[in-house]
Image 1 (cartoon, rainbow, N blue to C red):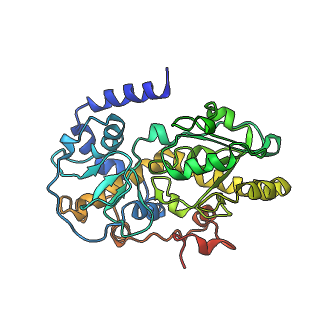
Image 2 (cartoon, one colour):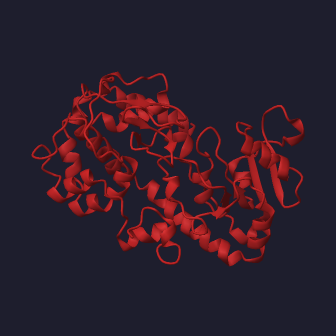
Image 3 (cartoon, rainbow, N blue to C red):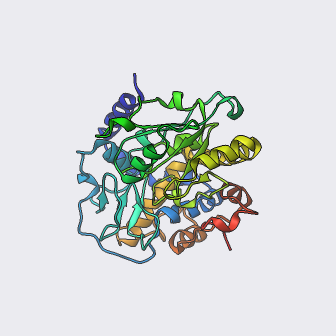
Length: 350
């Protein structure tokens, strides 16, 4: 049975369990975490939910979240069901590249600009969060870059035009009206045979970025414009990935450099894998998701934190509502390039 089929079966069953079972045990769920554990993850909670001011909502309730986009519905309901069904919530499903007029739950948002109204949650995760099972070492792979993708923006088309026939690249489109730029589709497993995998944003973020950074291949990409649960806006060039020019004109140059300097490539790959690993800790992902909604519902005046949730200490509540995003613990700084590249990461304490 496929991963997607199992996903639907599990969520269909859970969605038909009386929801009171979940929202009546919210406090007990939070009791499973120590204050220290909660505080260690507040930088991520406040990065996804940047809201600091109170607001009001006239939107639908949790009980009436739209089911038409079922992958989004199930992923939002997975944590929204821990709250009373008559609580109001605003959301925008799909590939979101603009900032909503009112604070809303989204899968993606622009990295730059005034984006607090875009509250990120891990939506459509079955498509976007795939972990590579890579058994091939970096040095055993082909000395080439690979990319396959749809022709849904000019940057991707230009990538194919520049490197379709390059001896250092296996790059091509898989659809569109430019047959001279097309090449056969390649699976993830086939692409993992190359040392370098190019990532280029499509409708919003690049779907392949997460599995590339979990593999033994080196990710090469232009600067991200959009971000999701993966916190693409925090990725540090030269530490998590190899930065390409916006027009990708330097791809062959970067390939040649890392072919001559494989140890440097392996260091970047190691950092990328460490960064990616935190998104597969199910216990932490659950806590972060619940706290994002707690903060959202508190600021919208629908939940009172003080006195209602005894499991949240005063310092946790203060940190949650302060908007603090500094990853100031040593183990956190390792994820974002503390030291010689630390200044390039906006989440690290100054």
